Image (cartoon, rainbow, N blue to C red; front, side):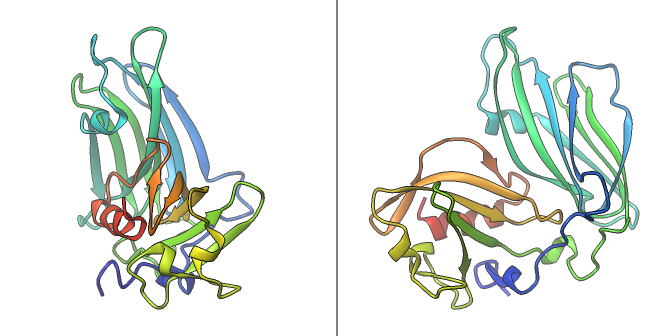
Length: 241
């Protein structure tokens, strides 16, 4: 099944939500040039926000460019594939002239995972990833699917039904009402568009404005799904970016 054809299958096969009995699966880790990152312990299908201040010298790159200098290190228990993915990233310059980068990491399979700054070799984050109670064998990393939802920024949210496999988001319909997306998203109006494509089931949100039959992003950040470029291409086609 192609990514486009599978774009909305997740409406029937949603990734596991974090266990409500656990304190929180979305943690925050901050490091500032520490000698070595401590080894954390997480379960599959959890998330962590890793925030670091990186020194690029006098000329700071964009967040997308900075991610090229962040090495992903994977040691899966079964020796196959990756143990985590970065699902979004954002940041800003610091008063000290560094670039603060926040990376939203979703754990995918048991093993070890780490992030390192290529320019210095510094370990930014490292974690042992266990199967845990959130592990869902029905949703392995290689079968993730895309869910799209809309928020009109006035308290109304809709889930998009892509069962007819539309080429454009505006040609799709809403899951509950059956209304066309184009009927609730008026031309020239800005909305928040959310995408779920991760083992943790975490939404990644962007701001976009409808322009005719397509949309444009109104904010550059976050960088979405930098480790899953195939789904980024699907999103770009749906949104006509």
